[in-house]
Amino acid sequence: MNPDFLVIGAGVAGLRAAIELAEAGQVLVVAKDSLRESSSEYAQGGIAVALSDDDEVELHEQDTLYAGDGLCDRAAVHTLVEEGPAAIQELIDWGAEFDRDGARLAFTREGAHSRNRILHAHGDSTGREIARTLYHKAASLPNVTFRSYAATTDLLLDAGAAGALLYDAAAQREEPVYARAVLLATGGLGRVFLNTTNPDVATGDGVAMAYRAGAEISDIEFVQFHPTALHVEGAPRFLLSEALRGEGAQLRNQEGERFMERYHPLQELAPRDVVARAIVAEMNRTGTPHVYLDLTHREAGFVRARFPRIYETCLRYGIDLERQPAPVAPAAHYAMGGVRTDLDGRTNLARLFAAGEVASTGVHGANRLASNSLLEGVVFGARAGRAMREAVRDRRSVSVVCQPALAGSSSFPRPPAPGPWPPVLSYVQRIAWEKCGIVRDGAGLREACRQLEPRASDNAALVALLIARCALAREESRGAHFRSDYPEKSAAFAVHSVVRKDADIVFR
Image (cartoon, rainbow, N blue to C red; front, side, top):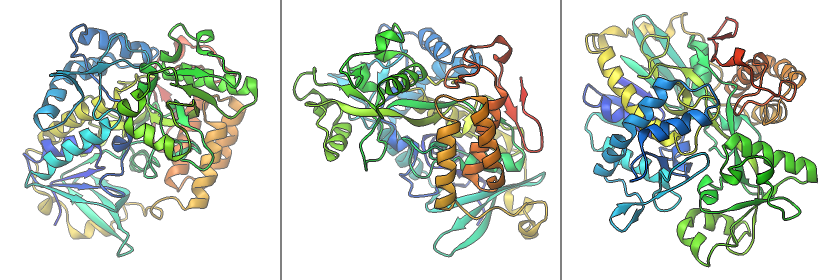
């Protein structure tokens, strides 16, 4: 049976949208892997909201604009911070358990925030707690159905229908699913890079599918590299949250020297792009593959109690954070760009919406402010859900609109095999990391384009190619996009890149 609404992705944005959509019809939420395998689950740092006594939404707005380095959409930022407090209260009403100081919510500070406005849950499991809350709320609604291990291979869009091809791994076949509207909430693209904090599912599928369908992709060159991922041989690049630095963790080089004071007045709490480049500079200067994150000066028991998940993970790989500094290095973490949308998740294609990390509203600009991503998911996920309800209010049901013959229509191009084969993915990851990483230049980006173009039928290769092309076109350095051959910011590029299939890149 075809649903009224198809939600592709079961992270915070997809779940929040599904709750809104349940009021208007049947909702099917599909996940590429298990329902718990999303970037939302991995989000440790917290969720930013202006609710503490000394904070104001205007200050949260100013901090977000500052971190975005001149490229934030002001209306998107205002929407995020203005609607944030109500979104948090809604989560609490639905059962979210945020950390408290007595009866009051406990707020901490992270990089580039001027106030304590970061809420945590169970110390370092904030994303998991929010996803849990939203899943239980959505699952309690009779109109919401979930389907895991259903990879989406391509979108099916024309004037009269919306849908997607799902790959059933057990049956080893593709299956078309049609709906009155489709929401892309597929998350990020970190797995396109060799070193990343993202889960295995984050290969940029949503961006690739939307691009093939004709959607506009915006600001895809802006990829945030988190400064502090665990760097231990044989260990995954586990995120060591910004909250550690918010609680006093110090960055030291191989010589034991604190170095951030040489790079920014906010030192360890500078914006992420600044800290990541500073770490790379120190690694290059000392000839080492990492620097150190040091919490040994904190009182005994603090790290274990405050960050239990991080502490136990590091201990598993032989690092006791209370006794020794952790080796860390930057890793791909978050995509500021994605499928271009308005503030209600609408794309340039009828019936296709997007929300969360896969979308580009302009809210993050050139560099996302720490802990704004979970807030983006709940705020813009809800807005997209409401907009989808309104968009299909007067349309016929999907059973009338979608004819069975549509599945075989030549208007729908045949998708590539689901998921990148490991050798292809490894090839793409090396190119993306070496040529499209923290420090870029024209020669490397041109070489990346040359190497990736023959593989662009693969989702990860296509996304990496789009990053390389747009990074090559942006002849400046801004936020997370740094080019050694154009190291300064240019007023001419204080605009958004937009690219779509069979068209040149434009800036507007």
